[in-house]
Amino acid sequence: MDPGLISVVIPAWNRAWALPRAIGSVLAQEGAPFELIVVDDGSDDGTEGLLAGYGALGALRPVRLPERRGVSAARNRGIGEARGDLLAFLDSDDEWLPGKLLAQSRFMADNPGCAISQCQERWMRGGRRVNPGRRHLKLAGDIFLESLSRCLISPSAVIARRGLFLEVGLFDEDLQAAEDYDMWLRVLSRHEAGLLDRELVIRHGGRPDQLSAAPGLDRFRAMALRKLLAGPLPANRRAAAEAELARREAIFLAGRRKRERGEREDDLAGA
Image (cartoon, rainbow, N blue to C red; front, top):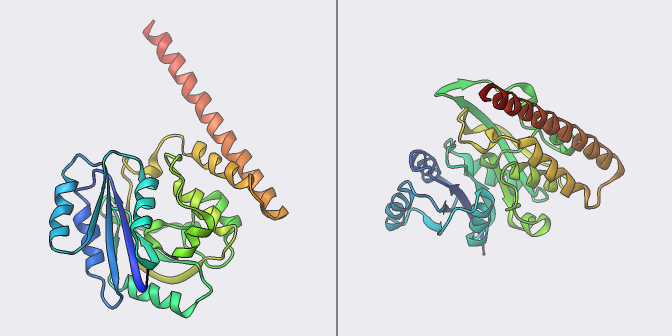
């Protein structure tokens, strides 16, 4: 391991259209030593050839999974390949602003007891900037309770110490969605979140192919909460997690009943 190195992991599946923007935003980072690992999750859209070109230039280290295994498996493979003591993640459809790695690595050096920190984001939808509501702004400190109802940590904004993943485990490869919600709840149940209160990430959203738009998201968040409740938690956190689990399950069941009613009505209309 290289204590001065930051390992940057980009997981990608069929994102050849977006990867040059994400990769370029990492390669433009100055002032902080880093390695870039891009994990191709069995893409069939030309991503493999695209990454081979960057690899030939020595700009990044491409890793290819022979078949699609999901974003958690891709991130985990990147963590396994990483040589740095600090790890940063970037979703393949997002990008970093200049100075992101330098500023965050300095924050972590100035706060040696901090296991994980993040920065603020600039949100874009359909090519236009939108302002996130105050409830979505990143917070610092003990934010476990606030993070039960909404995911307050974004992978593209995070930098974390390697030892954190040895402590809490890797991303859950059984979760088809909400894998970040699961990870950050495990982290926040034990650690406070550091915050560099600057916009250093551009987050592109609003597309149907994103995991955050996956149907049945509340089912996966309920699965994450059940996992969390299977372990030790202080009484106040356990009560809050149980209440949130009940809420998520109620939302999921209501949605399932609505879908089933719609399917029955469609069957009757076609009879």
